Amino acid sequence: MIFCGMALAPGRKVRVPLPVPGAQPLETLCLCGAAPGRTLVVTAGVHGCEYVGVQALRRLAVELDPAELSGNVILLPLANPTGFYAGAKQVVPEDGVNLNRAFPGDPAGTLSARLAYALETALYQAADFLADLHSGDCNEALYPLVFFPTAGTEAVNRAALTAARALTAGKKMVNQVSLDAAKVLTVPYRVRSTAQNGLYSWAVQKNIPALLIERGGLGLWSETEVNACCEDVRALLRHLDILPGGNPFRDQVEIAEARYVESAADGLWHPAAGLNDSVKAGALLGRLEDLSGRCIQEVRAEFDGVVLYYTAGLGVAAGDPLIAYGHP
Image 1 (cartoon, helix red, strand yellow):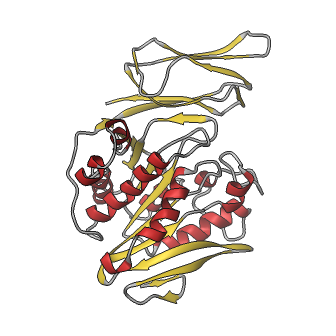
Image 2: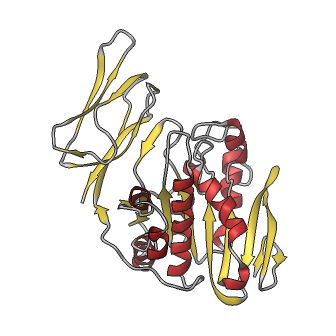
Image 3: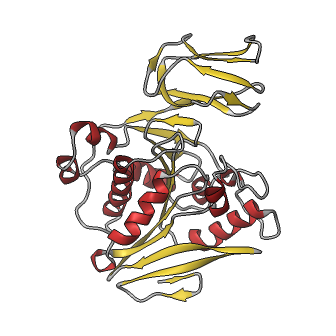
């Protein structure tokens, strides 16, 4: 395998710098399998306060053995390192831009644009499949879910959907944990996505099957969530035949239509529904108030559905996400 100009011999695990124009390189770990096969690229840390994926990739960097792989794995734990170390909510702190809205990139642009350019230039040409790991940000509570594309070619969309359905814990893994923990080890919702300007969604536009997996939130991480995220990646590796074993398919709810409600103004947000709550059309989902208590915005469900994530923080700015819900 050749990655970022470096030739990697089969059976090796090597840290490879990913160059960024006008900035410090990003650190990747490349595992070149002992046998030939496909290449899975896994990224995390696009947003600075989403920690589960970062920890999972650090752990997998130690645990995965190239001798067991038929194919290759490229791990990028921190796509936005300055945002991570600064604890910056959603943005690259140098320019205030959401990296997941910066694709396609620009080698002569601000840092977010240059990061996007570097990521697509290095990762896309190496990937047979790409998975981007996220969480709810420091102010967001989130139920585990996976976004899969509907804006790519039929073949790319189908490959991504099939992979999304494979995100379930293996029987051995479930047997090792409690029943409550085992529930976290699956991805119960898959959500159709038409996005085109994010790390995973721009890959789809470049004909690379890709997914965005969400676990955890509120600027927290737990061993259970990290274990579950590691299992997500291992499930993808088995699905792609990079690791042996295969995956049993499970019933998984597909969200065909979703609503993403944003704040109409700066205000104080009071959610009225919780994660995975079933809501009826017309049900109150939350209220946005000003400092005096006057209601600025009342959010009600447009249809029967289930709550996927919501902002748990009190203060929100105009345009911030408030709540997301959807239905099959």
